[in-house]
Image 1 (cartoon, rainbow, N blue to C red):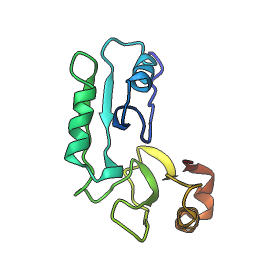
Image 2: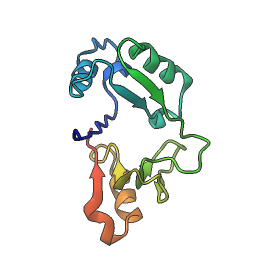
Image 3: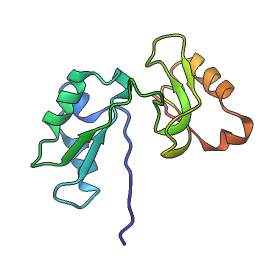
Length: 137
């Protein structure tokens, strides 16, 4: 059986103004399939309908097998076990009951916002700190 791979991106690609599709084309090419599966998790914008529409416009049926996973209104918001988010507004929220598809926790904008670093450090038990994913701006 071929090795399976998940490529996770935080921003960029089809959501960027003036996007020419190069980044999305590159990620799709990694699959070596004519019509790869692509799933959009619009958590950074609260499952915004506008962003979901842009996603489907960027990945029509000829290009990919596209789907999206709405997570707002669902009690658990993160694909990891936990993390930090401002999706519910400020102050930052610690997520301790994520979906657990990926081990550990995630913190976007880790180097760009000092309160994120503090919140992420405070919300994770010491024994889980080796499984943290800090995403820099």
